[in-house]
Length: 235
Ligand SMILES: Nc1nc2c(c(=O)[nH]1)N[C@H]1C(S)=C(S)[C@@H](COP(=O)(O)O)O[C@H]1N2
Ligand SMILES: [Mo]
Image 1: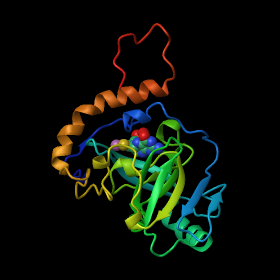
Image 2 (image 1 turned 90 degrees about the vertical axis):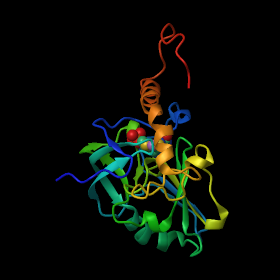
Image 3 (image 1 turned 180 degrees about the horizontal axis):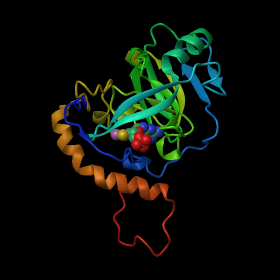
Image 4 (image 1 turned 180 degrees about the vertical axis):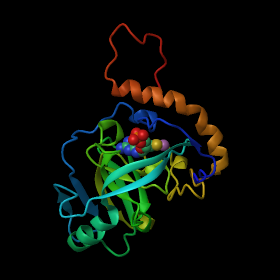
């Protein structure tokens, strides 16, 4: 039997490139190497050339939930577990301060959010480089993306390039308006954003889905010919 969707979510078939519209035209600088910087409150800053080196590859199937209410079911991600990276590389080599229990996440396109380290250590959290049996495409976050299935999609940072260990009281930078980023964003608890309740944000976000998908698809298709798109609203 198919399991029920989390509160306020609706299943869609297609997995589209998506995000905050200002990010539609921002692309990763490089898509060939799984390099990763580890910094912040650590004894040793790390510049990993390959974040997967020496770690066991795993495949995990999970549903992907965007805060705007669409869900794509049963995606098969491949990569390494965040917890393996943490215990086998970050803990021994970077030596994060025990008080730095918050991890700020950054993508090559400038996307920023954060999660408690504890949330990232859940066994289904991956650093992924393959999706549904194929190498990850630029659309979905190549060369390296985070996949945090229990949390809204904005925590699953694409083009992941930096992990910064911070103390909770330091706070962290976010990509959009602050009210849009919940510090945990757990799907099961409908933690869509700060301040406004999740059930209200459903209704504010849902009408934006179609135009956002179109904006991202257009941007990924490349610059429009000069004579097309005249009069089309730019977001
Ligand atoms: N670097 C980066 N990561 C990102 C985003 C983004 O714009 N840039 N968008 C987020 C949002 S809101 C969602 S729903 C998912 C969309 O993932 P997809 O583009 O692979 O569908 O990526 C998340 N991670
Ligand atoms: Mo999203």
